[in-house]
Amino acid sequence: MDDLREGDILTRVSRYNLIRDQRLVYIDVHQSLHGRLAGKFVAVPNLINLVARPDYQGVGETESEALARCLARIKDAAVEELFPRKPPE
Image 1 (cartoon, one colour):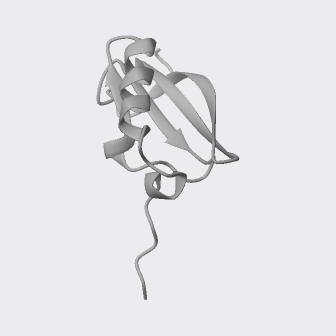
Image 2: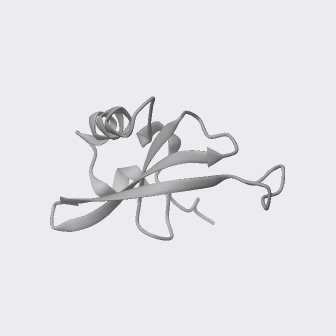
């Protein structure tokens, strides 16, 4: 990966769709190709432009493991709980 900068992170992404309470949540599982992530694979729930809080993300040595850990963390959470809220002004 000679064309990347030292601090760059490049990942391969697999996307899963979770429909919960008639709402769609994407779960992107990132595999690090260049640079450092929290683990070899990281599963991140998101709404395209809004990423779930880290305590709802899953890390693993395989895609399946990261996804399973993520799903276990979000099992009892409502969609609204997954994402950071804007602090009141």
